[in-house]
Each structure stands twice: as C-alpha cells, then as structure tokens.
Length: 299
Image: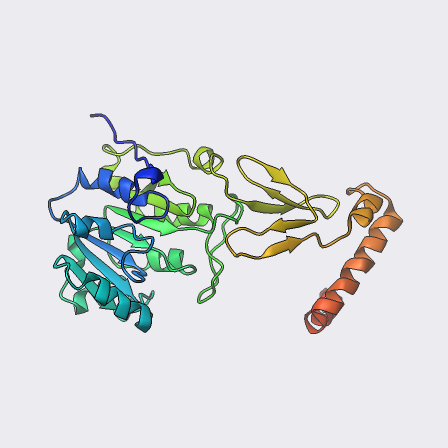
C-alpha cells in the first residue's frame, strides 16, 4: 500500500494560514464519513482556520472552541447558518475531569471517542494541553514557535506566551503515540501510529531547514546571529520575527572585535564583561543586583 505524502500547498488554501487545510483534506480521504474535527482557539470562525472549510463544504462536523467572550460572539454570528458547526465558549485546560478537552466535549454531549482530528492554536500552552487532552485522535495540528532553536526541549512556562520548540512537540507526540507527518511555518502535524502504514513520516530537521523561519544564537564574541534555512544575518538591528519586535546587538561591534572569541584578548573580554554588566544595571537594575548577589552566595 502506497503511503500518503501530506502536502500543504498554501496557494490553494481558502482559510488556513499555511495550507494546513489541504493536509487535513488528504487525511480525511482515509478517515470515516462525516468525521468530527475540533479546533481551539476557534477565534472568530474563519480567520486562519484549519477546519472550518470542511464544515462549509459539508464534509465534516466541526467543533470550534473559543475562550474569549467577544471573539466567541463573532464566532457564533459568523457560523450561525452552518448546521454542522458546534461553537463552544470555553478555555481548554490541562486538568483531567475539570477543563480538559475531553471534559468540555462530554459536557456538550460530544463523545470524545468520535474525534478524528484536533487543531491546537493558543499561542503558549499548546504542548501542555495536547499532552492532557484526555482523548486520542488520529491526527493533531499543534502550533510551535518558529523562532526557537530546533535542538533541545523548550516547553512554554504554564500560563505564559512564549511557545514551544519543535523538538518539545515532537517529544510530546512520540510519548502519546504520534509521528511527525507534515510541517508548515507555524504548525507541526502529528499523526497517530495507527496510521503509520497509510501516511508517510517526514524528516523533521530537513523540512524545518526548508522554511524561512528566523532563529537566533550567540557567537563566541557575543554577536547575536539570526539564521534560517535560507539566510544568516549579524546586522546591528534585526527583525525578531513573529513577536513583531526588533533585536539590537547587546555589544557594539568594536567591543566584539576587541574581545574576539574564547581565546581573544583577556583584557578585552574583561572590558566586554564590564560593559555588559553596566548595560544590564541600566536596563534592569533590581534584577541585575539580585543576580550578582545570588552568584556570590552560590558555593
């Protein structure tokens, strides 16, 4: 049996940001008739939705979950004429039996066992909630932070809005019985091992390096490096990417060149250290003093 290769094809997408709906469409070909698909946050219904198109085309029953009251009102208004959309005003959490996805569905007379696919986009605790959904769909689309490095494991601190890196989402998926089947600039598509003989697995690193997502690292001399699969930059001011902020080099070029790398001029590195601490004291005086005191107390 030939395995399905999932392709985003964003140019043909109607509502999803990067063509995720085309990936779902391929998965629906090997799924049940009239499947149940879930998306949260559902936002206002159509903006960057990965699932709403299948309700519009009357292919699936779509459950849209949105916690924000004002956005939910717009969601209800926008989908009022669609009989196969079920809008729910709730925040999906990670507490089993209280606010997990499974619990919310049960409270709304939806059998969690009937769910074929889930799309998670909450700009923060995506990995935590994915891990604690209390249901096991055939696929999940989970948002990741594209500016975080691929290696290592970074999980969003609970309740914050930092995001998760790809490796953390992959690790979580593997533990839950999923494999990586597609990647877009902001979403990882994970498919249940039950479909391993039907869907092709991707090389995650290879696919990530094809994207133009900015990531950042620090050179030996203190230079911030912005890099992606297509380019690198060490400019003095750089676009930080999805946060809509800018990154300014923490050290001036002359000081980076003076100190050099790990085997550079010793006195130059001392000057660099003094400059860095002085800048930190000006920008974050209390935090810097606390850090200095804690380091002195450390054994």
